[in-house]
Image (cartoon, rainbow, N blue to C red; front, side, top):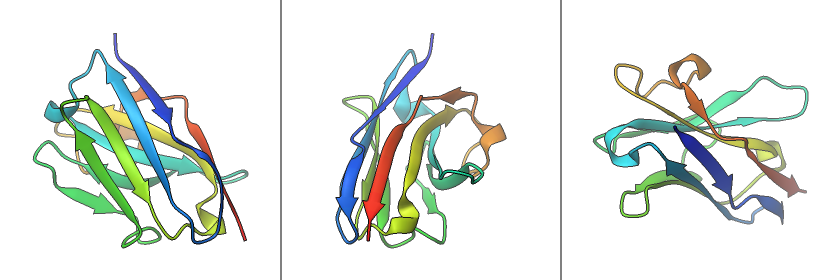
Length: 124
């Protein structure tokens, strides 16, 4: 049984920072492909960042240079450090996991496992 649980969301002012975490059980973070997605009200769910088994990362253009995705293999968690937050970053953030060959893909179909999300709100 695979379970993903996000935490670390909250409300911050523009320019602030948040660190999101995704705790995994029944799934080995170090051996798999993972990603963060987000969904704003009235918008489609969009990919934010991906990380592969070898640690390679990719980011959406809108967050590149501000967000960092990483794994903590000892704790079996996925993290997303978000800096210089903007109001457009507001939304529900989801942790996702899958296996090769569906790695490094910023699309929902690639990931069979999902968390329930954590809310991020950025005020101007």
